[in-house]
Image 1 (cartoon, helix red, strand yellow):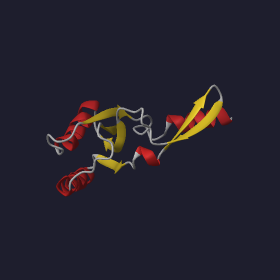
Image 2 (tube, helix red, strand yellow):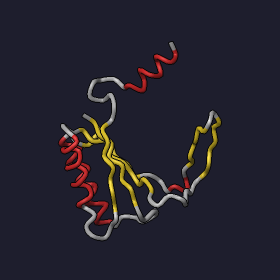
Image 3 (cartoon, rainbow, N blue to C red):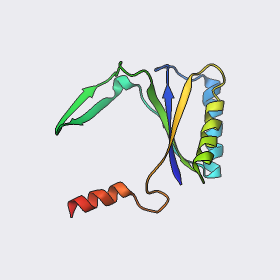
Image 4 (cartoon, rainbow, N blue to C red):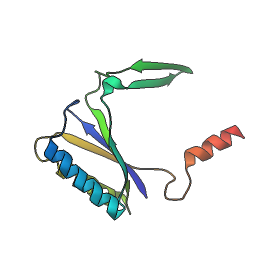
Length: 130
């Protein structure tokens, strides 16, 4: 089963130290070898982002930064895990690297469709086109 672990930051714009980057690199290599890490990346600052919204049939786009946000999604990891508990343990390994200096939170959610070989969103789109 695949899970998405979204990393939420309280301190937008804070950069990890060289030591933390090296530690994360080693963990990423190890988890990739184990087959538990499918993909991961940090995200650029919200100031470089755009929010696209559909409200009552009207589309709008707003450029960042999004100052009303108390926290921002700073990155993600797509995990291959046997269960939610396993995905949580993998996420804890990542968070533990940060020590006591960071205030982080990850939201872990199971992804649809990846365990059965097809994506339900694609099915829904195909059904709508028919």
